[in-house]
Length: 270
Image (cartoon, rainbow, N blue to C red; front, top):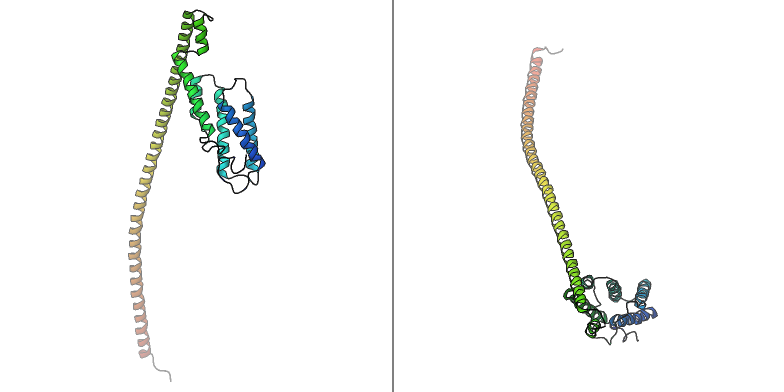
């Protein structure tokens, strides 16, 4: 696998490192194993995905690591494989189908020979498989092998199988009903919590508006009082200045007249 032709991320400025090449090879192998029908006791894919996580962490720590877009695409595919393994461990097909909807496959093919990303193909296959299993549980159908055994008389009587299928159908329907009731209760609790928080926020905002209005009113009153006092102070200052000026003029005139009289009355010194 060449650095520029083996991967599906286009030409790179620098050649891919040996660690990245090994990661791409192991990723291709994991995608191929995920697309195949595996035995429930198969353990290699889980080990390979764990090794992919270790290699991805080591690749992020390298000085000459790929671009952030390539790293994000690797991480997306590894997380998809990890989520797919966790989904397969669920017991109910409805839970598997629900968990499968939240998985995000890769957006870019791992190799240049792929037209569609392998993880996207695996995602579609697993979605179809889980949907088929859930439909089989709801309708009470069984696998072709058990059906063949029923027809050939290998298994027990047909009424017993029908009763078992009806019981399984009732169990599945009851499980779905319980799940719907639980979701409805959670949504109702969230709605109540949202209503309570909204009312509390509305009360706080109303109190803040009242406090702000009162503060603005007090500020206006203080401003009016300040203007009134300023005018009174100005008038008082003007009155004080006029009275002092007239008093000084009177004193000066009195001194001037006294001096003239003193000069006229007192004899001249010989």
